Image (tube, rainbow, N blue to C red; front, side, top):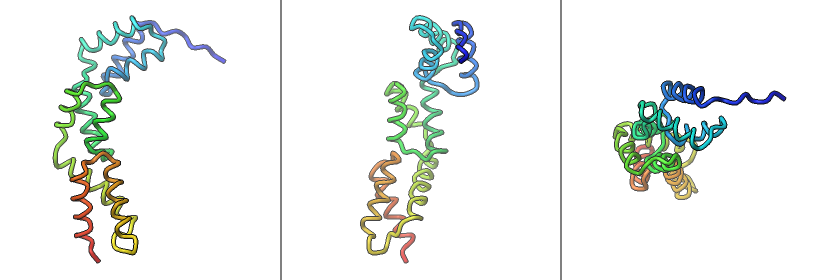
Length: 163
């Protein structure tokens, strides 16, 4: 088996700067990548400081981008986005700003997409109507949407698709 050639701190810094230039990254993800490369804590701290000073890493910018993309492309609700950002050790202030940056129309559309996709596969009016409506409600909640919005969406789907 071929052994890995050790990476120098300068090479690691250049690689991480290149990665950050191509896609938005947060400090925690870069830190993890540097540890996997074999960087020491001191080297990692120095590289992270360089990347932050030169605007390659900006956790607030990352939170805004992450929140917007997860809502638009993955149809995640605010709670799920908040949880994922917290897992990446983003500050609560940056998380709040990221969530606030989600367009209301995008958020409503994501909620509608999630609800309609699930509603297509279940019978909301048959013998198990109550159970199936709760299943739809729980599914929407599991995607990170607020319970009041989820309940409103279930009611709207039921109203719009009455047999």
